[in-house]
Image 1 (cartoon, rainbow, N blue to C red):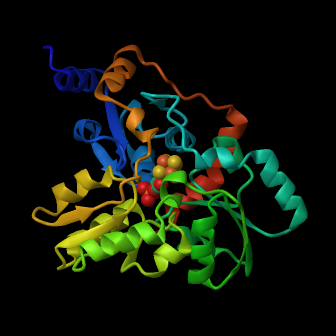
Image 2 (cartoon, rainbow, N blue to C red):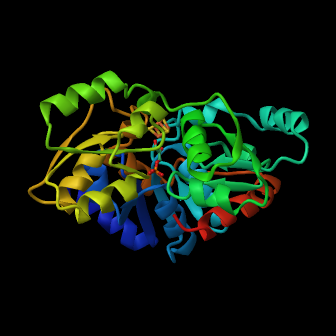
Length: 300
Ligand code: 13P
Ligand code: SF4
């Protein structure tokens, strides 16, 4: 048996393992996965799986979230160095400082953060339920971190006063109005769908704003046949699979290089040798569990 896919499938069965992959991973990785989806879908799947081993094909905060939700399971990262650039923009210590500055103001934190930062949050959220999470908080003023673009979007949608953080996703920050307008000129019939990590001026002109899974569902249901997709280009594979015959256009710089570090070879190595195991201090798991569990309970 020398095909890498066959070897991975055999190991999965022998070890009762499951492979979860984010929508931004490469085509080959998505094709090996048991479940492909957005951060919320992946967290929920990680929490409900019967598998003993979760191989998390995504950046490190996603695997950590799976470990927080399922501490009894072995969570393996095929590429432990694959990290989200935005998650590094907000430490637990920095959150403690902002909490001191705004005493009593609840903290809603994006799931794109490190595990220790989650221990300082009242509630965690993903792009798919950020608006609903902030709406559900019993306060007119909320600290939202670390994504300033998502924070501005949430402020507009909820009407609440949001204390913004200065973080951003470098991939979505590079989606400029000028690049979007160039695509609109080239494809005048196309609808524009955007991830809320994009700048507010970009979101303003979009026909739909939502998480990666939200974008997929919108494009599937829409009678339109062409879409300008303002998020990472790994989405193209899922969109083409889900919407045969429809066309999808991305801006040329929409590439998350760390997501692309994960390969079939690294998945095979990780499954075979059980490398890249996520270990978190018990007190971090305990304190991060509440905000993360709250996140999975609130619908997108
Ligand atoms: P989703 O939760 O929409 O999949 O987004 C995750 C992410 O990292 C976006 O850059
Ligand atoms: Fe992080 Fe941006 Fe990559 Fe998403 S696309 S994982 S927010 S760096």
